[in-house]
Length: 618
Image (cartoon, rainbow, N blue to C red; front, side, top):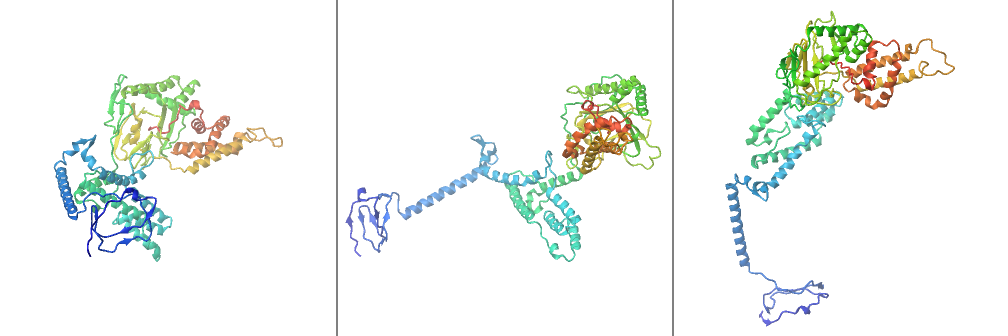
């Protein structure tokens, strides 16, 4: 075909009407500026008209394929040169860049910000289990929390008769520790118990546990890769992590950390006590003749001291005579069995009771005054020796006598007072003690003044929080004192009473008071009711009310969660206590134990400072 060239000029912009539609003409041919070569192929023409968005424009740039290839090669060469230079600089200055800054941030931190953020998010997800394993108000989490919960659960399910559920839970536990011998033995036991129940025997682990472990292991692999290659810091919170997940270069350190955690779980973590009370032992002793026999270093704790010769021998004898006189007069604590052991009797007297007895000429007034002055003497010694930052006030002073029951001491293995904690709540898992009710948190310092040593036993000892390491103190006319927080080394066992028992006694107590209130002794009787033959305080309603009082008092002394148990019935408790106090005080023949119960459980607000403490070791 002949190529006929014709000189053409560009069409003017006014030639195109943008509001009008045109057919599209697609042709294949060569062109030069001002010239169009005839097409050597059949052109394509659109079947429908199309809208034109703009006038034709001259396109710039080169259309030469060779020039494009040359440009691409040059760009690739420059890019490779820049990358090689960057790698060389990074390797050469890697140890220097951490100290260089740009716009207030370190260069190396800017380069690694993205991977650090990703690894930090994974590390945060790994630490979620420690948040769940930390009880409210506590600091330390329970180690190996999830496997421990599964272990408790499968045992409980088996005891409840849900053997199939126990199998599923145990298989879930085996995902954490596949080679644990105890778990494998238990699985064999459960299989034998199920017998021919093949469906229950084939129960698979819980899918939630399977998904959790798979996700956790994938995250651990990425985190350990970051530790090995990116200098990322990560502490694995789990003891069940398989060793093959940890890179070879990190396994020695990983094994050492894991071994430390296992030792801490077996023996209990021993933390140095931080004393922030404001008391500092080692101050002057203002009383002439008083000597320091033991300090806190010897006594296995902080802010502790044993002082000798605080009292004279004559003063000790007067205090013993005061206790004997108060007991014989029917006041104070009658010689009843100790609440801590059935092999001893327990007697006691408060300053308030001693003053009342002195007013009635039942005890010597000088002895009662000496009782009060001894409390003040001890307060002065404590304030000076422990360099108290503020004035000390006496919460209560209590004279206590313990006596061994004759003929009941042979073969005895128990303690006069069990190892206990008075002023805080001990958390055995973390060996921490929390100053929370029902502990005696109102105390800052506790002091014990011993009067005699003409008895067998009676040694005071301190333990570590494991109740194994013991320091024994032999005391005579000595002042043994310590800061309240340092009682955390002494553990105390309490009666395991049910909450339902406390609430039942409160309900019965309230109902009996209502019955007694409506009886003829306390309220005007209906006209048709005859007068009672016996006084109202000798009737069955009054007798049961008095028995409820004694039982409620015993629960108050021995049930550690007495206040919490009473809370749902607080409206009954608040109504009945003042009324019972007024009612029973009208009885002319109350026993000593009933009077004591009235003092401690039905006392008025004015008597609250005269708190009877039934734990003389505190």
